[in-house]
Image (cartoon, rainbow, N blue to C red; front, side, top):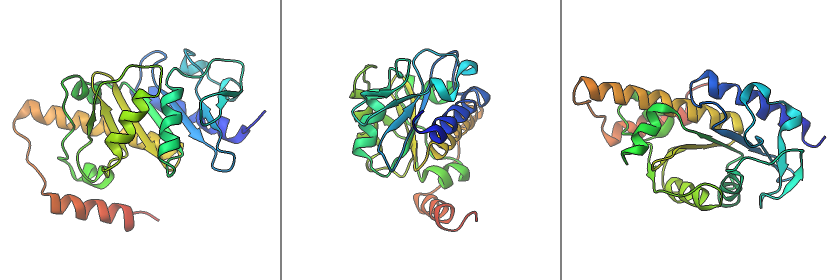
Length: 216
């Protein structure tokens, strides 16, 4: 079996999506690119999360063509591969329909940067991309265009949901989790009153500290 370690990693990471309330039923998916071969491991289409195993992960090339696997790859495969081809620094992609973040997408609003945690992780707002239909590369093109000039590792797609990227699949999952957490905080704050803002200068300082100083 090809890319056994990466298959196992992607399989385990899928557990984080329902655990963090980012998906319902079979929606959502994670992929990871192997830097050495350039091949991509992605969730099989329509399989329930508890039934996922390393063996039923699917391996495709960067054009989305099946290399190994007994199942059809995710319906978002073409878009994942488009992102990998156009963002060479990315080795992990996550797609979710998480509730609070998708609510912003449905009303056509980006998620404003209103918490220090969001300044840390996203370096500004979580941007909103346009509408695109599922099944081809169109969603991937919107993601690439939306994130190209942004510090954010994730974006919203109008009327659809969240795409998050990272240097690894785990980093992309973290970005997806943080996207929903901050979307929920911002939404709840908006119900109480008018949220306070953080200056662009302070957001830049927060993001620099987090990306250059924080952690081991």
